Image (cartoon, rainbow, N blue to C red; front, side, top):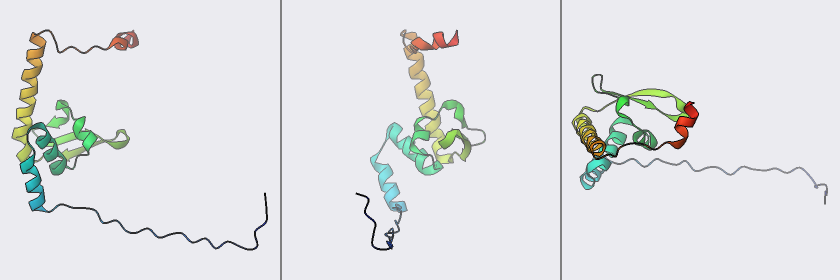
Length: 126
């Protein structure tokens, strides 16, 4: 069915509507932080205060935190490293969380747990 067309087609692209980002006011942000607590609140504060992406926050390691320089060293999109500011208000909470996890890990080690089963790791090594 290859039929010739009777003239030239004047195609017109549809225009995109500009999308305006949703930005919360300071009052809305403060109200949000009153409803969350614990680790989730700490994560939200890191996201909000440092500009971390969600997966960067989830993958954050203790060795990526530099308390002396108040910086976070992040492996971000495209496997690129970047360094961002660690807000002063989060530092005490972050140190408390790290200590809490250290104690939990120590308890697990004393109970005979805390090991990681990696069956293919030894085969890969040798």
